[in-house]
Length: 234
Image 1 (cartoon, rainbow, N blue to C red):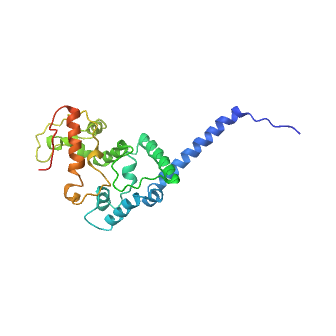
Image 2: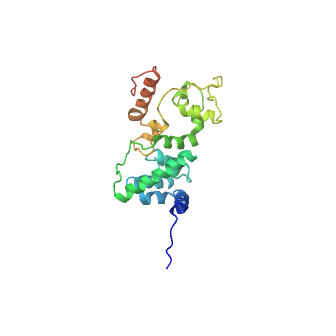
C-alpha cells in the first residue's frame, strides 16, 4: 500500500483562496439581506425592535413621529435602517459595516446586547455621519453665517472637494461662495440623534437643544478658540 504525502505548501494557497471566497460570498449574502429591516431586527432585538416599531407606525401615518429616524420613514416609505448604518456605501464604509455586523452577531450569540432604549454612545459615529452627508450634502454647502453650524464642519469641505456645489441662501443672494471650515471634531450625529425620543422634539426638527446641540456648539467654539461658550435657552 502506497502512502500519499500531502504537499501542505501547495495546499495552503488553495485553503486561503477558499477562505477568501467564503468571506466574499458571506459578505454579498449579508449585504443583500441587510436591505430588509426585518432581517436587521432578527438579530438586533432590543432596543432595535422598538425603533423598528416606531418606523412602522410612521409609515402607517402616525404623527408626530417619535424620533428623527421615524421622521425619515414618515417622509419616505422606501427608507431603511441600512440607509444610515452603511455610511456613504463606499468601500471603506462597506468594510466597516460588515465588520460591525460580525461584531453584532457575536454579541447576539453571547446574549450580551445593550438593551438601553435611548442610546447616546455611538460605536462608529463617522460611519453614521457618512450616511447623513450622502443624503444631506446640500445642507452642508449652503454658505452664510446663518448656516455656519453646518458649513463650518470639516465634512462640508470634504463634500465640496468631492465636487459638491456651493449655494447661497435664498434671502441673501449676495453671499460670497466660499467655505471657511472650522478645525473641529463635531459631527452631524453630535446634534442629530436618530433614536432619542424627546417630548415635543418634532417642534424643533428633532433636536435636543439643551443636551445635544448647545454642548456641540460650545465644543466647536472651544476647539476653534472663539465664539460664545455659554449657551442656554432663552
